[in-house]
Image 1 (spheres, helix red, strand yellow):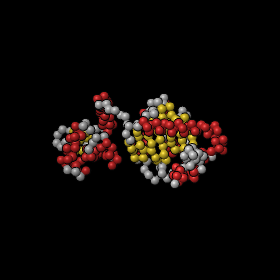
Image 2 (spheres, helix red, strand yellow):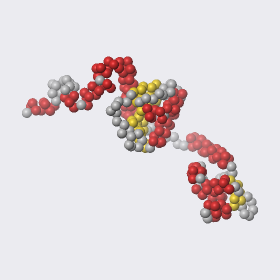
Image 3 (spheres, one colour):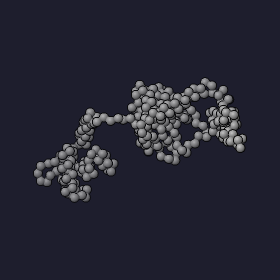
Length: 289
């Protein structure tokens, strides 16, 4: 019963109006007194609710004493509410002042359902291109939504981490996760819609699902550059994987360590992370002393 009352209230009925409708649907034709007794509510409040329901066309009233009330079939109520709602939507669309929808600020979303629904909405709105960087879990969750994007005439490129097979028509660039990639901080995902809207977020791990949306040009360009660098590296690895791994190590670790490991930085040749004379600025100062 509680779920039915909740949805009746979502349709625009007050709590008491919804309860009156439920009693009439369950018991058939009733007087106001009988409804008040069944609900344990004062008759004045029930009569007021029944009058509102009659004005809304949801109940029929008899003439005479006592007055009897009967609920209109719920199908008829639903059709009338739907028609009124559609008419209101059309009017608002035609007459609502237009405003600049450019989102140059950074807007945040929290909660799994909110984030996933926003991603689905933005994918449906894509007109030219969608670039997605997803873990397999998110790619599977959005699989049906991704399938529909190419059908809209939109180019879809998806870089995936982990094993997932996407529908035909999706340009997929699969990557296997590295053993040392942490999962406790959540799986990162990014989407770039029509080279205009950037969506960045995390899902999974110990924290709630979070996402940020922006149309800031700097962030849009950053995501675009990162995505295409990623797919270019993917193709290079496909063509020259063995040679690259032999020279630079798996997943280019030798190059990465060169710029992230302090000891490696100290061992670099002149001109790489050092002064032009091959010595650090600290070394120069010591020499002067």
